[in-house]
Length: 259
Length: 177
Image (cartoon, rainbow over all chains, first blue to last red; front, side, top):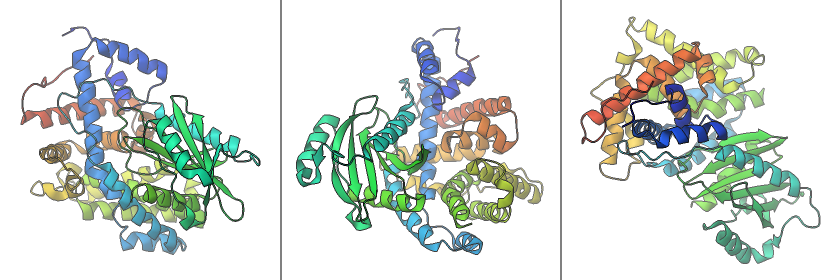
């Protein structure tokens, strides 16, 4: 037991909530390693956050009450998009699960990311770099899909899949291996009949990644993406299409991976 | 117009999740979200001047919640839940596959409802909704320092409440200064 703890509560909470820069985080982790009490607090608080997700993420998948739909429709018609979104959200909730709800004794100082930020950034860059490529958009073409998937799975250390998007009009062009800033990543490219392209960017989740139970949306450099993470892999569906359309594609991608 | 309504719709699942956790009751929560929604949709012209739609919606929701709590006989919002109904948290419990784990989740759900609403708000906006402390402060209309102190007190209280009935081994209360 060290009597003199240098961590402030503010630092401790910011650490728990993943709101620190790399530098700050390293600093806190150094302090934490010598402070069992603070470690216990970090473990407990982090477990609380996870438990809150386990308890309440399910709400996000509940069908929207008719009154809310009516309010939106009164505003203007978007019934279609709404119905589809609710259905897909339910699928995601199953993933939520109980992401390690161990309130007691969870003392390991788990590094918080930046993982998400880096993931979004690399996924965006990869998309922008390879999208306009005419002659070499991919390393391995779709006709060798089995080989492509086996190869990428081996490199990523996880069973990866190239989601089947034919249902929404996009065919696999192929894929390639890429850096992610933390290790290997995979990119799959898709194209529809009119030549519009999408990419899917995949990498292994960081250790201890809390299962993210919902799609998240990011928009950078004119590129939109929906992404999600589970304890094995993080996926992003990226495109320069409108948000509704992209959301629809992401849903389909998710469902083909998690039937 | 379509775009804006769609953007608002995008946030409804989060608004519902937060409100359910905040008030512990499905119908009450959805009523509040409904109010929030109607208000937001009829005031979209006000939003254009601000940037962050999520923060704006949560701010409206917060105001709706405060007003509703006031209407209910000046009763503090924290007593507006029925302690005889821990099953309110069903959606969460139903996904807990491990025996014993569900109990702990239920324990946390109950503990959460025992906190003052103002601590619950901060815990949920940061821990569940993932807002930065400054954002939380803006949504609730309080200084960041207040967010931090409520967060500290609330989390520590939750920890106490959830470790009280269980096995020992966890230090009861640690103070970090």
